[in-house]
Image (tube, rainbow, N blue to C red; front, side, top):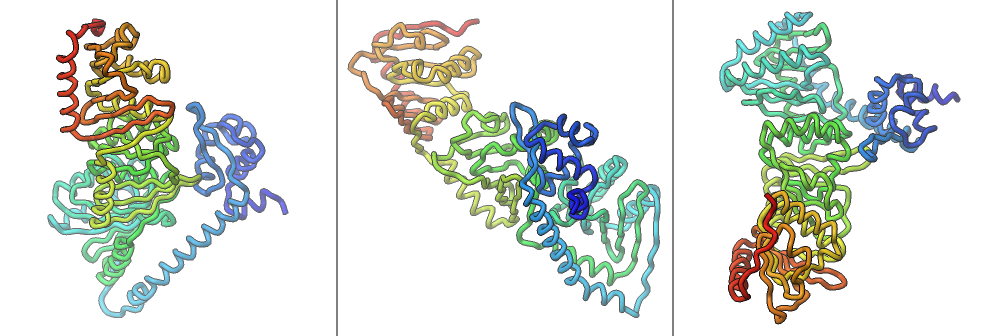
Length: 517
Protein backbone atom coordinates (compact mmCIF):
# COMPACT_ATOMS: atom_id res chain seq x y z
CA UNK A 1 0.00 0.00 0.00
CA UNK A 2 1.20 3.54 -0.77
CA UNK A 3 3.08 5.06 2.20
CA UNK A 4 1.54 8.52 1.85
CA UNK A 5 -1.94 7.01 1.63
CA UNK A 6 -1.38 5.18 4.93
CA UNK A 7 0.01 8.30 6.61
CA UNK A 8 -3.04 10.22 5.42
CA UNK A 9 -5.34 7.61 6.98
CA UNK A 10 -3.31 7.81 10.20
CA UNK A 11 -4.30 11.48 10.33
CA UNK A 12 -1.27 13.31 8.97
CA UNK A 13 -1.85 16.33 6.76
CA UNK A 14 -0.06 16.65 3.43
CA UNK A 15 2.59 18.92 4.96
CA UNK A 16 3.09 16.59 7.94
CA UNK A 17 3.57 13.64 5.59
CA UNK A 18 6.19 15.50 3.55
CA UNK A 19 8.14 16.72 6.59
CA UNK A 20 8.00 13.33 8.34
CA UNK A 21 9.33 11.52 5.25
CA UNK A 22 12.03 14.20 4.86
CA UNK A 23 13.09 13.70 8.49
CA UNK A 24 13.35 9.94 7.94
CA UNK A 25 15.61 10.51 4.94
CA UNK A 26 17.77 13.28 6.41
CA UNK A 27 18.18 11.95 9.94
CA UNK A 28 19.01 14.69 12.45
CA UNK A 29 18.80 18.09 10.74
CA UNK A 30 18.09 21.78 11.17
CA UNK A 31 14.96 23.37 9.67
CA UNK A 32 16.58 24.62 6.45
CA UNK A 33 17.39 21.25 4.87
CA UNK A 34 14.03 19.91 6.07
CA UNK A 35 12.19 22.71 4.27
CA UNK A 36 14.24 22.13 1.11
CA UNK A 37 13.73 18.36 1.15
CA UNK A 38 10.02 18.41 1.97
CA UNK A 39 8.99 21.32 -0.21
CA UNK A 40 7.23 22.92 2.76
CA UNK A 41 7.98 26.64 3.02
CA UNK A 42 10.54 27.71 5.62
CA UNK A 43 7.92 29.93 7.27
CA UNK A 44 5.68 26.91 7.95
CA UNK A 45 8.11 24.08 8.55
CA UNK A 46 8.46 24.88 12.29
CA UNK A 47 4.67 24.70 12.73
CA UNK A 48 4.52 21.36 10.94
CA UNK A 49 7.40 19.93 13.03
CA UNK A 50 5.68 21.15 16.21
CA UNK A 51 2.52 19.22 15.23
CA UNK A 52 4.59 16.11 14.53
CA UNK A 53 6.26 16.41 17.96
CA UNK A 54 2.86 16.69 19.64
CA UNK A 55 1.93 13.43 17.92
CA UNK A 56 5.15 11.80 19.09
CA UNK A 57 6.48 11.40 15.55
CA UNK A 58 9.44 13.80 15.80
CA UNK A 59 11.88 15.01 18.42
CA UNK A 60 14.00 18.10 19.08
CA UNK A 61 17.48 18.62 20.49
CA UNK A 62 19.56 21.76 20.92
CA UNK A 63 23.17 21.66 19.76
CA UNK A 64 25.45 24.67 20.01
CA UNK A 65 22.45 26.95 20.36
CA UNK A 66 20.66 25.59 17.25
CA UNK A 67 17.55 23.44 17.11
CA UNK A 68 17.93 20.08 15.38
CA UNK A 69 15.04 17.77 14.58
CA UNK A 70 14.74 14.08 13.82
CA UNK A 71 12.00 11.57 13.12
CA UNK A 72 10.91 9.25 15.91
CA UNK A 73 11.13 5.52 15.40
CA UNK A 74 8.40 4.60 12.86
CA UNK A 75 6.77 2.38 15.46
CA UNK A 76 5.67 5.66 17.07
CA UNK A 77 2.95 5.75 14.37
CA UNK A 78 1.33 2.72 15.98
CA UNK A 79 1.84 4.26 19.45
CA UNK A 80 0.14 7.42 18.21
CA UNK A 81 -2.86 5.47 16.91
CA UNK A 82 -3.11 3.56 20.20
CA UNK A 83 -2.99 6.84 22.14
CA UNK A 84 -5.74 8.28 19.96
CA UNK A 85 -7.79 5.17 20.52
CA UNK A 86 -7.32 5.43 24.30
CA UNK A 87 -8.30 9.11 24.30
CA UNK A 88 -11.41 8.41 22.22
CA UNK A 89 -12.36 5.64 24.65
CA UNK A 90 -12.01 8.05 27.58
CA UNK A 91 -14.10 10.69 25.81
CA UNK A 92 -16.70 8.05 24.92
CA UNK A 93 -16.87 6.97 28.57
CA UNK A 94 -17.18 10.60 29.72
CA UNK A 95 -20.04 11.07 27.26
CA UNK A 96 -21.76 7.94 28.61
CA UNK A 97 -21.35 9.26 32.17
CA UNK A 98 -23.26 12.46 31.42
CA UNK A 99 -25.91 10.83 29.20
CA UNK A 100 -28.40 10.22 32.05
CA UNK A 101 -28.34 13.88 33.06
CA UNK A 102 -28.59 15.07 29.47
CA UNK A 103 -31.38 12.62 28.65
CA UNK A 104 -33.29 13.79 31.72
CA UNK A 105 -33.14 17.30 30.33
CA UNK A 106 -34.24 16.04 26.90
CA UNK A 107 -37.21 14.17 28.36
CA UNK A 108 -38.19 16.96 30.75
CA UNK A 109 -41.74 17.99 30.01
CA UNK A 110 -42.22 20.65 32.63
CA UNK A 111 -40.84 24.16 32.49
CA UNK A 112 -39.90 26.15 29.42
CA UNK A 113 -36.51 26.28 27.73
CA UNK A 114 -35.46 29.43 25.95
CA UNK A 115 -32.79 28.99 23.26
CA UNK A 116 -31.29 31.87 21.30
CA UNK A 117 -28.54 32.03 18.69
CA UNK A 118 -26.12 34.97 18.57
CA UNK A 119 -23.49 35.80 15.94
CA UNK A 120 -20.62 38.27 15.82
CA UNK A 121 -18.31 40.03 18.24
CA UNK A 122 -20.80 42.72 19.17
CA UNK A 123 -23.35 40.16 20.35
CA UNK A 124 -20.56 38.27 22.15
CA UNK A 125 -19.61 41.40 24.10
CA UNK A 126 -23.25 42.10 24.97
CA UNK A 127 -23.76 38.57 26.31
CA UNK A 128 -20.81 38.97 28.72
CA UNK A 129 -22.02 42.42 29.71
CA UNK A 130 -25.38 40.82 30.61
CA UNK A 131 -23.59 38.09 32.58
CA UNK A 132 -21.61 40.59 34.65
CA UNK A 133 -24.68 42.77 35.12
CA UNK A 134 -26.69 39.89 36.59
CA UNK A 135 -23.96 38.65 38.93
CA UNK A 136 -23.54 40.09 42.42
CA UNK A 137 -20.25 40.40 44.39
CA UNK A 138 -19.14 37.04 45.85
CA UNK A 139 -21.48 35.11 43.56
CA UNK A 140 -19.71 32.59 41.39
CA UNK A 141 -20.00 30.98 37.98
CA UNK A 142 -17.85 28.55 36.00
CA UNK A 143 -16.33 27.87 32.58
CA UNK A 144 -15.51 24.52 30.92
CA UNK A 145 -12.90 24.39 28.16
CA UNK A 146 -11.82 28.00 28.68
CA UNK A 147 -9.64 29.43 25.94
CA UNK A 148 -9.06 32.78 24.25
CA UNK A 149 -9.89 31.75 20.70
CA UNK A 150 -7.51 32.17 17.79
CA UNK A 151 -7.70 35.94 17.43
CA UNK A 152 -6.14 38.86 19.29
CA UNK A 153 -9.55 40.48 19.62
CA UNK A 154 -10.59 37.78 22.08
CA UNK A 155 -7.41 38.21 24.15
CA UNK A 156 -8.02 41.95 24.46
CA UNK A 157 -11.69 41.42 25.29
CA UNK A 158 -11.11 38.82 28.02
CA UNK A 159 -8.28 40.87 29.57
CA UNK A 160 -10.61 43.86 29.93
CA UNK A 161 -13.56 41.72 30.98
CA UNK A 162 -11.70 39.96 33.82
CA UNK A 163 -10.48 43.30 35.11
CA UNK A 164 -14.13 44.42 35.43
CA UNK A 165 -15.15 41.08 36.95
CA UNK A 166 -12.36 41.23 39.54
CA UNK A 167 -13.19 44.83 40.46
CA UNK A 168 -16.82 43.84 41.03
CA UNK A 169 -15.73 40.90 43.19
CA UNK A 170 -17.48 38.19 41.14
CA UNK A 171 -15.97 34.73 41.66
CA UNK A 172 -15.15 32.37 38.82
CA UNK A 173 -13.87 28.82 38.50
CA UNK A 174 -12.29 27.97 35.16
CA UNK A 175 -11.24 24.69 33.56
CA UNK A 176 -8.78 25.79 30.91
CA UNK A 177 -7.66 23.84 27.89
CA UNK A 178 -3.93 23.25 28.18
CA UNK A 179 -1.69 25.81 26.51
CA UNK A 180 -4.23 28.64 26.27
CA UNK A 181 -3.98 30.56 29.56
CA UNK A 182 -4.01 34.25 28.56
CA UNK A 183 -1.15 36.38 29.93
CA UNK A 184 -1.52 39.76 31.65
CA UNK A 185 -4.95 38.96 33.10
CA UNK A 186 -6.42 40.02 36.44
CA UNK A 187 -7.07 36.69 38.21
CA UNK A 188 -8.42 38.09 41.48
CA UNK A 189 -11.44 36.11 42.72
CA UNK A 190 -10.58 33.40 40.18
CA UNK A 191 -9.64 29.75 40.57
CA UNK A 192 -8.08 27.90 37.66
CA UNK A 193 -7.40 24.30 36.77
CA UNK A 194 -6.58 22.60 33.51
CA UNK A 195 -8.38 19.89 31.61
CA UNK A 196 -6.58 16.67 30.68
CA UNK A 197 -4.49 16.96 27.54
CA UNK A 198 -6.98 14.96 25.42
CA UNK A 199 -9.72 17.56 25.96
CA UNK A 200 -9.30 19.64 22.82
CA UNK A 201 -12.40 21.39 21.56
CA UNK A 202 -13.21 24.66 19.78
CA UNK A 203 -16.12 25.16 22.20
CA UNK A 204 -16.22 26.97 25.51
CA UNK A 205 -19.10 26.54 27.96
CA UNK A 206 -20.01 29.27 30.46
CA UNK A 207 -22.71 28.70 33.09
CA UNK A 208 -24.17 31.31 35.45
CA UNK A 209 -27.42 31.17 37.39
CA UNK A 210 -29.82 29.27 35.05
CA UNK A 211 -28.05 30.32 31.84
CA UNK A 212 -25.69 28.19 29.74
CA UNK A 213 -23.62 29.77 26.97
CA UNK A 214 -22.24 27.37 24.35
CA UNK A 215 -19.58 29.36 22.48
CA UNK A 216 -17.54 28.80 19.35
CA UNK A 217 -14.66 31.31 19.53
CA UNK A 218 -13.98 31.85 15.84
CA UNK A 219 -13.48 35.02 13.80
CA UNK A 220 -17.24 35.55 13.88
CA UNK A 221 -18.14 34.01 17.26
CA UNK A 222 -21.23 31.83 17.47
CA UNK A 223 -23.09 31.47 20.80
CA UNK A 224 -26.12 29.42 21.81
CA UNK A 225 -27.74 30.86 24.94
CA UNK A 226 -29.86 28.30 26.81
CA UNK A 227 -31.98 29.52 29.70
CA UNK A 228 -32.99 26.44 31.68
CA UNK A 229 -32.18 25.47 35.27
CA UNK A 230 -31.99 21.73 34.52
CA UNK A 231 -29.50 22.24 31.71
CA UNK A 232 -27.37 24.50 33.89
CA UNK A 233 -27.51 21.98 36.75
CA UNK A 234 -26.33 19.15 34.47
CA UNK A 235 -23.36 21.18 33.31
CA UNK A 236 -22.55 22.08 36.92
CA UNK A 237 -22.44 18.38 37.76
CA UNK A 238 -20.16 17.72 34.78
CA UNK A 239 -17.93 20.64 35.80
CA UNK A 240 -17.64 19.40 39.40
CA UNK A 241 -16.66 15.93 38.19
CA UNK A 242 -13.79 17.39 36.16
CA UNK A 243 -12.83 19.94 38.82
CA UNK A 244 -12.51 17.34 41.58
CA UNK A 245 -10.32 14.93 39.64
CA UNK A 246 -7.42 13.94 41.91
CA UNK A 247 -4.64 13.74 39.32
CA UNK A 248 -4.17 15.85 36.21
CA UNK A 249 -1.91 15.04 33.28
CA UNK A 250 0.00 17.64 31.27
CA UNK A 251 1.45 16.23 28.05
CA UNK A 252 3.92 17.50 25.51
CA UNK A 253 5.76 20.83 25.28
CA UNK A 254 2.57 22.90 25.51
CA UNK A 255 1.42 21.08 28.62
CA UNK A 256 4.73 21.56 30.45
CA UNK A 257 4.89 25.22 29.46
CA UNK A 258 1.38 25.73 30.78
CA UNK A 259 2.25 24.02 34.07
CA UNK A 260 5.28 26.29 34.51
CA UNK A 261 3.19 29.41 33.83
CA UNK A 262 0.64 28.24 36.37
CA UNK A 263 3.31 27.58 39.00
CA UNK A 264 4.73 31.06 38.34
CA UNK A 265 1.63 32.53 40.02
CA UNK A 266 2.99 31.16 43.32
CA UNK A 267 5.79 32.99 45.19
CA UNK A 268 8.18 30.06 44.84
CA UNK A 269 8.71 26.73 43.13
CA UNK A 270 10.83 24.06 44.79
CA UNK A 271 12.65 21.81 42.31
CA UNK A 272 13.90 18.41 43.48
CA UNK A 273 16.14 16.47 41.09
CA UNK A 274 16.47 19.26 38.52
CA UNK A 275 18.56 18.47 35.47
CA UNK A 276 18.33 21.72 33.50
CA UNK A 277 15.64 20.26 31.26
CA UNK A 278 13.44 23.38 31.09
CA UNK A 279 16.06 25.64 29.54
CA UNK A 280 17.25 22.82 27.26
CA UNK A 281 13.83 21.86 25.91
CA UNK A 282 12.36 25.36 25.48
CA UNK A 283 15.25 27.88 25.25
CA UNK A 284 13.39 30.46 23.14
CA UNK A 285 10.10 30.21 25.04
CA UNK A 286 11.97 30.36 28.36
CA UNK A 287 13.70 33.59 27.38
CA UNK A 288 10.89 35.33 25.51
CA UNK A 289 7.79 34.27 27.48
CA UNK A 290 8.63 32.74 30.85
CA UNK A 291 11.29 35.20 32.08
CA UNK A 292 9.12 38.31 31.45
CA UNK A 293 6.29 36.59 33.34
CA UNK A 294 8.27 35.87 36.50
CA UNK A 295 9.93 39.29 36.47
CA UNK A 296 6.45 40.72 36.96
CA UNK A 297 5.40 38.26 39.67
CA UNK A 298 8.72 38.11 41.59
CA UNK A 299 8.59 34.31 41.38
CA UNK A 300 11.64 32.47 42.76
CA UNK A 301 13.18 29.02 42.34
CA UNK A 302 14.96 26.85 44.86
CA UNK A 303 16.84 24.09 43.03
CA UNK A 304 18.14 20.84 44.42
CA UNK A 305 19.83 19.74 41.21
CA UNK A 306 21.79 16.77 39.94
CA UNK A 307 25.55 17.03 40.55
CA UNK A 308 26.15 16.22 36.88
CA UNK A 309 24.81 19.61 35.70
CA UNK A 310 27.39 21.74 37.52
CA UNK A 311 27.80 24.98 35.58
CA UNK A 312 24.60 24.49 33.59
CA UNK A 313 22.61 27.66 32.85
CA UNK A 314 19.85 26.62 35.24
CA UNK A 315 22.31 26.70 38.18
CA UNK A 316 23.17 30.37 37.61
CA UNK A 317 19.74 31.90 37.01
CA UNK A 318 19.45 35.21 38.92
CA UNK A 319 16.04 34.30 40.39
CA UNK A 320 17.17 30.85 41.57
CA UNK A 321 19.14 29.54 44.53
CA UNK A 322 20.84 26.25 43.75
CA UNK A 323 22.20 23.42 45.85
CA UNK A 324 23.37 20.00 44.69
CA UNK A 325 22.11 16.53 45.49
CA UNK A 326 24.67 13.95 46.62
CA UNK A 327 26.45 12.04 43.82
CA UNK A 328 24.52 9.02 42.56
CA UNK A 329 22.29 7.64 39.82
CA UNK A 330 19.11 9.65 39.18
CA UNK A 331 16.09 9.23 36.91
CA UNK A 332 14.78 11.86 34.44
CA UNK A 333 11.87 12.48 36.82
CA UNK A 334 11.84 15.90 38.49
CA UNK A 335 9.52 17.03 41.27
CA UNK A 336 8.07 20.55 41.36
CA UNK A 337 6.32 21.88 44.47
CA UNK A 338 4.43 25.17 44.23
CA UNK A 339 1.65 26.19 46.61
CA UNK A 340 -0.65 23.19 47.04
CA UNK A 341 0.58 21.59 43.80
CA UNK A 342 3.00 18.66 43.50
CA UNK A 343 4.08 17.73 39.98
CA UNK A 344 6.14 14.75 38.89
CA UNK A 345 7.65 15.72 35.56
CA UNK A 346 9.10 13.00 33.33
CA UNK A 347 11.49 14.42 30.75
CA UNK A 348 11.45 12.04 27.80
CA UNK A 349 11.02 12.65 24.05
CA UNK A 350 7.52 13.87 24.85
CA UNK A 351 7.60 15.25 28.40
CA UNK A 352 4.65 14.50 30.66
CA UNK A 353 3.70 15.74 34.14
CA UNK A 354 1.37 14.12 36.68
CA UNK A 355 -0.03 16.78 38.99
CA UNK A 356 -1.73 16.46 42.36
CA UNK A 357 -3.32 19.47 44.03
CA UNK A 358 -3.72 18.75 47.72
CA UNK A 359 -2.56 20.89 50.64
CA UNK A 360 -1.67 17.95 52.87
CA UNK A 361 0.34 16.19 50.17
CA UNK A 362 2.09 19.42 49.21
CA UNK A 363 2.92 20.07 52.87
CA UNK A 364 4.42 16.59 53.27
CA UNK A 365 6.58 16.97 50.17
CA UNK A 366 7.61 20.46 51.25
CA UNK A 367 8.82 19.09 54.58
CA UNK A 368 10.84 16.46 52.74
CA UNK A 369 12.31 19.09 50.43
CA UNK A 370 13.20 21.38 53.34
CA UNK A 371 14.91 18.52 55.14
CA UNK A 372 17.04 17.94 52.05
CA UNK A 373 17.61 21.67 51.54
CA UNK A 374 18.56 22.39 55.15
CA UNK A 375 20.85 19.41 55.65
CA UNK A 376 23.82 20.81 57.54
CA UNK A 377 26.51 18.48 56.25
CA UNK A 378 27.40 17.17 52.83
CA UNK A 379 30.36 15.25 51.47
CA UNK A 380 31.78 16.00 48.02
CA UNK A 381 34.31 13.64 46.46
CA UNK A 382 36.31 13.30 43.28
CA UNK A 383 36.91 15.55 40.30
CA UNK A 384 33.70 17.55 40.67
CA UNK A 385 34.21 18.40 44.35
CA UNK A 386 36.21 21.62 43.83
CA UNK A 387 34.13 22.92 40.87
CA UNK A 388 30.96 22.40 42.92
CA UNK A 389 32.55 24.18 45.87
CA UNK A 390 33.58 27.13 43.71
CA UNK A 391 30.05 27.27 42.27
CA UNK A 392 28.68 27.53 45.79
CA UNK A 393 31.13 30.30 46.74
CA UNK A 394 30.25 32.34 43.66
CA UNK A 395 26.53 31.79 44.11
CA UNK A 396 26.60 33.08 47.68
CA UNK A 397 28.74 36.11 46.77
CA UNK A 398 30.06 36.23 50.35
CA UNK A 399 33.61 36.99 51.51
CA UNK A 400 35.89 33.94 51.34
CA UNK A 401 38.34 33.12 54.14
CA UNK A 402 40.98 30.43 53.60
CA UNK A 403 42.75 28.91 56.59
CA UNK A 404 46.03 27.05 55.89
CA UNK A 405 45.83 27.74 52.15
CA UNK A 406 48.21 25.60 50.09
CA UNK A 407 47.72 26.88 46.55
CA UNK A 408 46.91 23.39 45.23
CA UNK A 409 43.92 24.80 43.39
CA UNK A 410 46.22 26.77 41.07
CA UNK A 411 47.90 23.64 39.69
CA UNK A 412 45.08 21.12 39.89
CA UNK A 413 42.12 23.32 38.97
CA UNK A 414 43.43 26.34 37.04
CA UNK A 415 40.02 27.11 35.54
CA UNK A 416 38.31 27.18 38.94
CA UNK A 417 41.13 29.33 40.32
CA UNK A 418 40.61 31.75 37.44
CA UNK A 419 36.87 31.92 38.19
CA UNK A 420 37.63 32.95 41.77
CA UNK A 421 40.22 35.45 40.52
CA UNK A 422 37.74 36.99 38.10
CA UNK A 423 35.09 37.29 40.80
CA UNK A 424 37.59 39.06 43.09
CA UNK A 425 38.75 41.32 40.28
CA UNK A 426 35.15 42.35 39.62
CA UNK A 427 34.51 42.98 43.32
CA UNK A 428 32.01 40.14 43.68
CA UNK A 429 33.97 38.05 46.22
CA UNK A 430 36.57 39.41 48.64
CA UNK A 431 39.29 36.91 49.59
CA UNK A 432 41.27 36.72 52.84
CA UNK A 433 44.10 34.19 53.19
CA UNK A 434 45.89 32.52 56.06
CA UNK A 435 48.45 30.77 53.85
CA UNK A 436 51.12 28.25 54.73
CA UNK A 437 54.61 29.76 54.94
CA UNK A 438 55.90 27.63 52.09
CA UNK A 439 53.49 29.38 49.68
CA UNK A 440 55.00 32.83 50.20
CA UNK A 441 55.32 34.60 46.86
CA UNK A 442 53.04 32.25 44.97
CA UNK A 443 50.70 33.89 42.48
CA UNK A 444 47.51 33.02 44.26
CA UNK A 445 48.70 35.03 47.31
CA UNK A 446 49.49 38.15 45.34
CA UNK A 447 46.58 38.85 42.98
CA UNK A 448 43.31 40.48 44.02
CA UNK A 449 43.57 39.31 47.63
CA UNK A 450 42.33 41.59 50.38
CA UNK A 451 44.77 40.31 52.99
CA UNK A 452 47.41 37.59 53.33
CA UNK A 453 48.89 36.30 56.57
CA UNK A 454 51.49 33.49 56.59
CA UNK A 455 51.28 30.71 59.14
CA UNK A 456 54.37 29.02 60.64
CA UNK A 457 55.44 25.60 59.34
CA UNK A 458 53.80 23.99 62.34
CA UNK A 459 50.50 24.49 60.56
CA UNK A 460 51.46 22.38 57.54
CA UNK A 461 48.52 20.13 56.64
CA UNK A 462 46.72 18.79 53.54
CA UNK A 463 43.54 20.22 55.11
CA UNK A 464 42.42 23.68 53.96
CA UNK A 465 39.36 25.36 55.48
CA UNK A 466 37.13 27.58 53.33
CA UNK A 467 34.71 29.86 55.23
CA UNK A 468 32.04 31.87 53.37
CA UNK A 469 28.57 33.03 54.34
CA UNK A 470 27.03 30.37 56.59
CA UNK A 471 29.27 27.61 55.21
CA UNK A 472 32.48 25.91 56.30
CA UNK A 473 34.21 23.56 53.87
CA UNK A 474 37.07 21.34 55.01
CA UNK A 475 39.03 20.47 51.86
CA UNK A 476 41.42 17.53 52.05
CA UNK A 477 43.92 17.80 49.18
CA UNK A 478 44.85 14.19 48.56
CA UNK A 479 44.89 12.13 45.35
CA UNK A 480 41.10 11.93 45.57
CA UNK A 481 39.88 15.23 46.94
CA UNK A 482 37.29 15.15 49.70
CA UNK A 483 35.25 18.14 50.86
CA UNK A 484 33.21 18.13 54.06
CA UNK A 485 30.71 20.98 53.70
CA UNK A 486 28.75 22.23 56.71
CA UNK A 487 25.94 24.82 56.54
CA UNK A 488 25.62 26.39 59.96
CA UNK A 489 25.90 30.12 60.68
CA UNK A 490 27.26 29.71 64.20
CA UNK A 491 29.97 27.29 63.05
CA UNK A 492 30.93 29.66 60.23
CA UNK A 493 31.07 32.63 62.62
CA UNK A 494 33.25 30.61 65.01
CA UNK A 495 35.68 29.80 62.18
CA UNK A 496 35.87 33.49 61.22
CA UNK A 497 36.73 34.24 64.85
CA UNK A 498 39.38 31.50 64.66
CA UNK A 499 40.74 33.12 61.50
CA UNK A 500 41.11 36.47 63.28
CA UNK A 501 42.79 34.78 66.27
CA UNK A 502 45.34 33.07 64.03
CA UNK A 503 45.94 36.34 62.20
CA UNK A 504 46.88 38.01 65.48
CA UNK A 505 48.89 34.99 66.53
CA UNK A 506 50.98 34.96 63.38
CA UNK A 507 53.36 37.72 62.52
CA UNK A 508 52.04 41.02 61.33
CA UNK A 509 49.80 40.50 58.21
CA UNK A 510 51.40 41.24 54.90
CA UNK A 511 49.12 43.47 52.83
CA UNK A 512 49.35 42.63 49.16
CA UNK A 513 47.87 43.42 45.84
CA UNK A 514 44.77 45.37 46.72
CA UNK A 515 42.01 45.26 44.13
CA UNK A 516 42.81 47.43 41.11
CA UNK A 517 40.99 50.71 40.98
